[in-house]
Length: 331
Image (cartoon, rainbow, N blue to C red; front, side, top):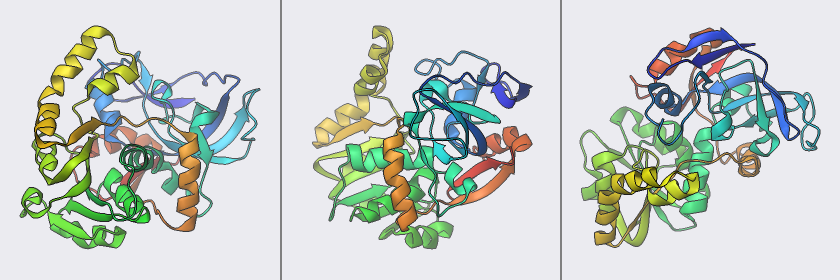
């Protein structure tokens, strides 16, 4: 089958003929019809995560997908050939930039019936990130005040909608040209990041979802109420993440050092910092399927690319500030 692989860190994606994936007893073989483009893929290609995500190269990239079931393993009862599904493969089994992929059935869910394959392919990684930040870690409920950075982006555009569904008051940062767009998604307060300082305008927030990191994350701590938390998806990773990943003692010490400054600043302010590295979950996607079909969440697809455009499409993620997600189609 055809697939785009990375053969070495910082090398270009290469279109290659590779064997069909092995299908285990708990797996589902999926014909990929749409795959989301994520900065995570570009960071893997560049080797930025090689210490904590040590992929064995060559590696097929692609972290989320929608498609049609071809066949299922002997233990699978939840899916049948012909079913339309979507999902985020486990981090050890990525590979959606290919004609076919084998995914653990537990990481898949039925595609929402109300949206297209391209829209479904845009969702898994960003919607699971939003769910795990706001529902699992943040426990957002009615009356909560939530700040979501980069509200027009892939994670932000979904997180705004989910936070509003949960009953929160939502503030977000965006460019002036995207102000009306994020308001339409449900944002109550829009901060023009080019002209306004959110840390001077906001206070007493219950949760911050930060996808930018660095100084932006540090400033975000100041808008929180005491006892509340900032969740970072751009880093730095924290000791809890190192434990969950089962990293060796040397890496655990290194990660503790990386996050020491932000954790100390949070502690001084009486707030918390947590790093989130999203996990695959078909169970959560089934809940999200219901929300999508009820109209609570709508995917935002800014652009589609043909399969043979994958390398250029991935590179384009680092040069612009598009709305929502871009996807690969026409496999």
